[in-house]
Image (cartoon, rainbow, N blue to C red):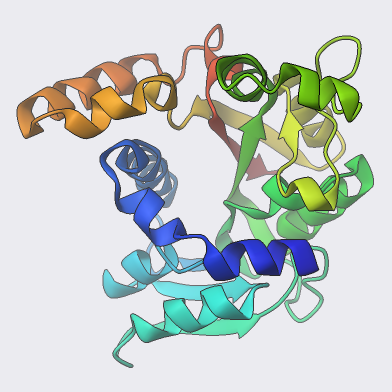
Length: 260
């Protein structure tokens, strides 16, 4: 936790999501949140790893009942500062690996939009996913975000010329899978690993979505777009973001599950 806390105490996560290229991930995630909530009256929403509240606060300000759990105190303070006291939101510090304060079958929608980035073993990932599924109502939805392996190899290892560094540190397997530890901050996965986790819990997959797709490969072009061009980029992105042949090349993915 020390590495993670130090990182988020100094990183402008809010600024990333507000940037033009960050908006692609945000708008895509919000699109699928809205899709999952269609037809549910007065939904109860849980966000685990709520960060600075980009999603939780937005949903609460729309009048939706939200419970926001965040591990890092610095992020939680930023989240709370956005509230005026009228929003139907409960905020608390907590860990994705232990949601025991919540009974099973409590929420219509449970979101893990950050915790899987920072869990480094299959056991930890499965524990976080199992807890999210447990507290979700039967027929409810679980949204889980992941950082993907191949964009890191393409952009960081080769694009930013870190090949010799990561090889010297033994941070790559023979089949080019990134090896991460807590000091490295982010854990990278492949689509087959996500499917393996899903198979261990009582869910069915609705969709696996590329939340930013090709955007981060060309972020400087995206940030420079005028409004009309960016709108067309979003049109294109929404056409291709569910194409399974492209999913693994996206920096971030969103696994949309329904509890059976």
